[in-house]
Each structure stands twice: as C-alpha cells, then as structure tokens.
Image (cartoon, rainbow, N blue to C red; front, side):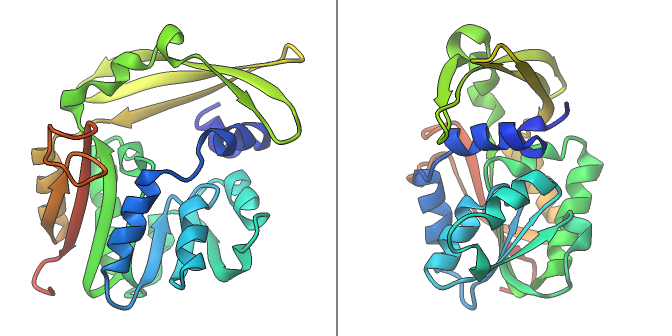
Length: 248
C-alpha cells in the first residue's frame, strides 16, 4: 500500500512508536517561537506530535493531513482539543490565515514532481498573511542518505504500547533523477507481513531556492543540521526558513 504507515491504523501505531519528540521538533518549536502572531499551520501533521507540542506552549495551531488514520491517532492524544485538525491537502487551506507554516518530517519530499512542489508552495503563499514565514526540512542529496535504506542497516525492532512486537526494515527499489522509491517491510509476531511504498524527491539547495523564488518566497536561512550548522557540515539536511517576498 502506498504510504501505508500513515493510512493503516496498525502501521500508524508503528510510526508513532518509532517517532518520538526529538531535537528536530525542538528546532521547529524554536523557529515558530521567533515569529510574531504565531498562528501556525502544520501541513502534513501526521499523528500530531509537533502540532500538539506547539499548542502546549500557547500557539494557535491547525494541523492538516490527507491521511485519516493519522489524524484519528492525533485526535486521540491528550491535548488534541487545543488543535484544529483538517483532513485535506494544501489545496484546502484557508486564505491569509496563518503567520507561519511548517512542514516537518521531510513532508516537502513527498511532492515528487516540480509541478506538485510548486503547487504546494503556491497554496502555502496564499494561506500565509503578509510577512508570513515558511519553515521545512528536506534531506540534502549530497549526503546520499538513501544508501542506508537497506535491509541490513535499517532493520529495527519496534514494540507497541499493547506489547505487539514488529520487526521493520527498508529497501530502496529505484533511484531516478533525484526521486528515490522504497518499500518499508513489517513482520509481526503473528507472522503477518505488511508493506508500505513511497517515493521521495531529493532536491539540491539550488533547486529548493529556485522553487521558493518562483512561488514568491525569499529564503532567510538554509541550515545543514538541527543545531543550525552550515549546509554540508551538519546532519545531511536542508533546513529552510523563508518569508513572502516584499512583505518582510
């Protein structure tokens, strides 16, 4: 199943167990805290980890995601009533409603074609107020992170809150022009086997900057790591902070 870790309730639970709060969330929390107004859009909010953390410190947060099972998991968590949850995509965003928009957990890479990425950025521009900011992460292709997505290096054991044990691993199936396709495999203790497939686009810094400029954004910073290191000297990331051209 395509993107099953966001759409299948069992695999959503596996995803949640594998993805606790980390310094990545601290980075986004810090950038949001620097922004006046702080009406926050979390596009691709998934199971709500960051959205709930932002709401807990007083921000007004809207979490948007197309995956119903992920949103159901988010709504079941403590504090979920403080977040507005919307099942949908960037095309469903209200106009001029947010001071800052974030896309975390490499959501930007799910827009595989340039046309898809461009449409999402245009939608985000429409959803932000004058002076609005956009913050997102995308993996630096120069780090070639997908080379570790193989059964040997990626194999892991995940224990769910109910005691279910899942063995998971990843394998790359194709690398074509910056688009990396892969399959997550899940082996359950009752001998069930599940799979989730996806393709992610790895864009260079130059490609990211060009797409943002075309959509009407000016780049403030691009960092290479979660401690705001320069590109190439951090964690193999491109951490992008931008604002609307002519409004800040």
